[in-house]
Image (cartoon, rainbow, N blue to C red; front, side, top):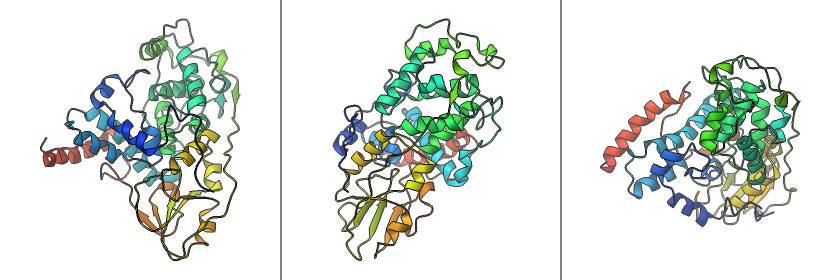
Length: 379
């Protein structure tokens, strides 16, 4: 099977590489910093392409510099790119530990499911319900809306973070489990020293709504002792199942190197022009652990279409490896640790590795690298 599927949402998130690279060129990193918290702000909408490995954070930063932006003037933009690397570095070190409460036990948990009102987009909070509907339709949700949703689920509805995080990840085109899981824990107080709350006034400000009289229309001091609102009491554990393409035969050139791609590595520029076998590996075991929607699979397959001569293998790595006669090459990732062959490092923006309990400890290290790069570039 070749990767030729076209997503139904291609107008919102095009999958051809020319459109993706053009989207990078259209970024205004200064306006981004000024407006990014507003749902109608100048966000980049690059996250699906970065999380899927089509482009890297390093590539985006270099293009901003090449376009003449002084890194000191776009520090907030660079910092937001660094957040994604921070989560990935944490996953490198912590592995499966990010699937559990990472730093602190989440307090006040009353259920391990998801409020049904969130799943049904019927919380009564207009901006949040609209954001969930958009997630279902397009596979995208603004970061601020994600925080509002997580706060409602975990801190108002008293759900443990993991099941709601799995529900959101299932639908996200930019689903990066590290970013998703640790962000949810940050909101729930499992990866940070306090929980995140947003009241109706905050939501109205950043979502351009004018609601009042909702269960969030309270002072911040009231949140800790607030009982679970009636609308959030019914819960459900969503059935999350990945529908993979049917397995089909692939043809390998004997003795040629085989490059292994997956849903986190769809870089069309990786070893381009080389005479190699290119295989997109979709492992059922991976998608049982981290299920994604049909839209996400369509998106992955469409992005893979930018890679010449790629073939899709639905099965486990060991089954694929048994058919390969030459060397196997893949990119390092926490979910490819069981691969055998040559692991190549990803294209990092910063060389700062390791686990840092807080992003800002990590960022201090990155700042030193950025300062050195600025000097080298003459800024």
